[in-house]
Amino acid sequence: MPRHEFQPGKLVAGIVLTVTGALYLGDALGAWAVPWYVVFPLVAGGLCLAGATGTVTYAVRRRRRGALR
Image (cartoon, rainbow, N blue to C red; front, side, top):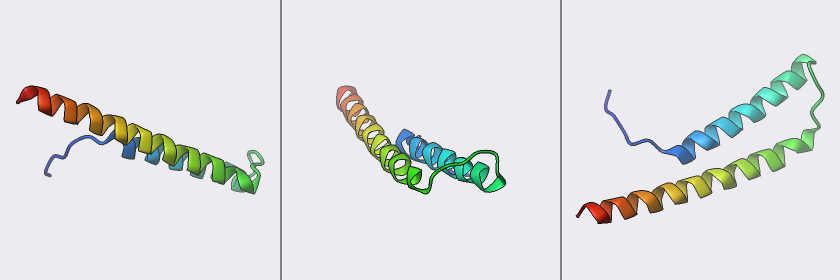
């Protein structure tokens, strides 16, 4: 399996979407009650956080790549 570089922005997005899915799974199973509108701030906030993480990662890698030359 070929290796690829680690992308923390995608990791953050995946974690947030998994948590959102787990919340609604718990709601469907009757463990707790989650209002339907909770998904919008969770997903939007998670995607914004993932974008910020990806931007910071890009800036750090670009800076390190320039310092190595």
